[in-house]
Image (cartoon, rainbow, N blue to C red):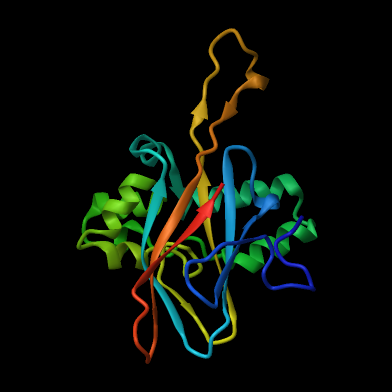
Length: 221
């Protein structure tokens, strides 16, 4: 399975949408994923003649504890992961190279460094590129929300999404699932990671028209 095929610009499974004429599709980028790390791609399809804006993203899980377990990966860690997966799948792997190019992260996953941010500890955290979903939500609701979003690659789902009329826009998010230790009685090969269902909620509006002012939830199972 690879990210795009010649036949469609909306790979993945179509999800139910609360916004008329705005469809979305969720796809797992298998060449860049395993049981610990999952790369999700979401295609937003605008069926109207107006621009649609999705903003104010918030990550949702079933319980508050899961927000603290779920990790979003960007920056230095994302760069290292993609390099390792490229090596694992071989540099000549067509699917892997297509996947990297299609989600727009090849060669551009680190948009900020510690020197770009006023507070050194804040800059170091962005550069490292690992936040819990709870921390992400707190950042997105804080005075640093714009600063945080500017540190993300342009194609990241936690940025504002602008979908042109009658077009498809594709975004992505990398998630690290928590390690689940089955105890000393089991063999290391039987250890696994705990998949956590989550969603990203946006506030949706249209440009140059009466605002919809509705929320849409991108649910990932």
